Image (tube, rainbow, N blue to C red):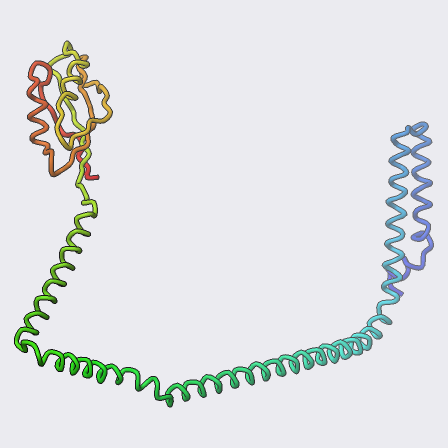
Length: 278
């Protein structure tokens, strides 16, 4: 008999909770009456010990029943797996049969539609109307020309071609005139540019309001002045920064600079800070 078996046969292991309780009561008596908190802790400890005892009992019962369960489970698993597999196989076979039937039906409908389309194409190819239509135009034109020739026999034979040429030329000229008139009505695109000008005064005593008034007094066709502001340059001197929009065909930057620099009493120089096409 091993040492573990000897210990297992001792009753002290089964009565251990009683010994623990007696030991606890001894220490509690030695330390005085227990407080409410100690009583709560004692209750919690008792509950924890009870849970541990229940778990141990359940584990022992499981260990005793485990060999029997292992012997019985394979049979149940085999039987249930066979039953479930058969049921799943039957279900799959039924779904495949249904899908196969549906596919056969779709293929039959497609074959019928294709056959109808082939019959219709064959009928159209055999019908004489499709082939005779373009051929009938030429004889009619010949007959008409023949009638015209019969009617023109009594007239000047050499003058008919000239009249036709004159009529064709007149129609051609009318179409050209109509196209030119239609084209002239369309608004032509006007090329414009946006300029940012830096206008510099002579010194800090220059009246900038008068300077701006002089700049804006420059007016010409195709010129439109925009916003402006004063930008510090240094030593108390400020320059006028002003925007304008010009039409490229009517106003040039050189002409604009010449017109602005005519006010020599206020303006020292002018620079184009930015030039953008619109």
